[in-house]
Image (cartoon, rainbow, N blue to C red; front, top):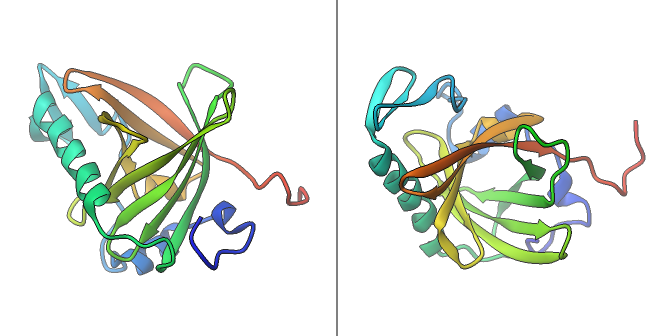
Length: 188
């Protein structure tokens, strides 16, 4: 958690207006990444909104580069961070998740956060970034730099956000991020 955050800051809801203004996208339309619908794999090529963005290997390399750029960035914990929320990460066909992630972004588009395996209670650091051109978010968890999670910044302003996990250059799976409410807050 960033220095100066109150106890519940990580749980704050971030809408598109706040994220866009904070990250410098106020004049740009939001880009929604809907894997399997507007982001598709066909004959080893990847298409976003019908436009080819390269081979599956190139698309993985792009996601990996976005994540590693953020991982290498100077991003002090006591800097200015916008909490994006806390999410359960799960396969779409599962009703339960064993991974909870918390994400925040700074004004340079660096992503930081934590991933918690709720079974083992093991925490790992999340590092990544937002690509300024495509609004594509990519990050890695812990020491595993070959597996990359990607979604869109706009996706992270929704209660449910599709995401893609690149397990390698030739193996991807569609997963789902579901926003969680702060368990310490009274229900409305």
